[in-house]
Length: 254
Ligand code: PEP
Image: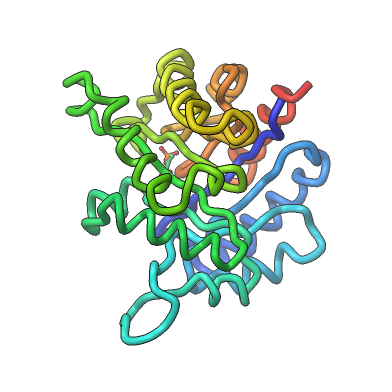
């Protein structure tokens, strides 16, 4: 089995005080779950503080976005080198909120994926369909297109050291989770599409599910053959809730 990975995406939430309490809470339980990779993705300005709090622990640090540019006149942007300098190991790219609310196109996401890898950081590539797309029967076409944009730019081998997160847009922050079988079907599609190009990469790549994962539904999702963990939004803002999901990752590994 691939090593389980549970990553929290704090989005636009938190303050210095709440993040200190949250990280300290996560650290109380994380050390007992040493067969699960646990990662937290902080808002940019809290990355140095989070890195300090995580020092000496096995919990990884990530950012929620990155520029596809390395430097220059790009007001408001943050480069992968800057994230590297402040201790990030992971970067979420192509989250559906970036795609839908900020107009990020497949090729922009692919550029961010490339910029992340260039700095030796691990991209967490988000893919997923909207409700309308699912109901029109084009889930695989949409997810395939999002994946292909990255493969076209970076080659399939680049996925061996990356993470993919399948996040159906209709399940994010809505309380509606994809059923384990619905999620597994898309995960198997993603792995199959990669396997058609390179079987070793398909075996290796971790594919996370994201969309209203909670302590109460994580075990059944993580029990599916192609689900290697989760990308967690709302439930990552509470240490006990997040640790319950990490515990499900640990149990799935036994
Ligand atoms: C997310 O935004 O990546 C996510 C999965 O959110 P939630 O867990 O709140 O649905």
